[in-house]
Length: 108
Image (cartoon, rainbow, N blue to C red; front, side):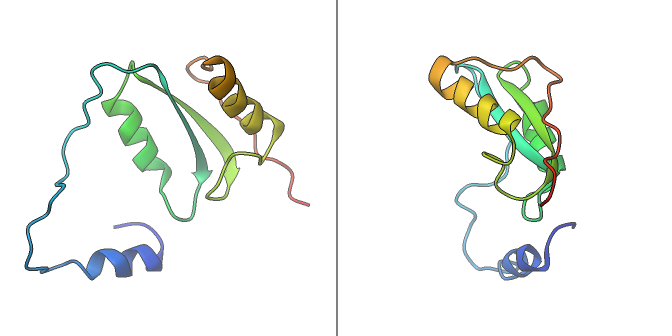
């Protein structure tokens, strides 16, 4: 399992838990929904980018995944591109083209 030590500790604490899982893993089904914007950092220390691509694969046709090429957990506001992408989606329901991405912002 890849991820941060904090996540490992959280998951390991559940091993052997005597209760049934109330929300077991399952394939995602999004039968009827407007296109969902997924904006995810390629180098997120808490949520691996592979998880985002997994969700995107399972919801193909219902989601558009826009990777932010930089690091960080929160992406909105990291660059003009990330902010404009989210603002355009929320205010005008404008979805970016498949294959779009946002370049990493310069670190000051």
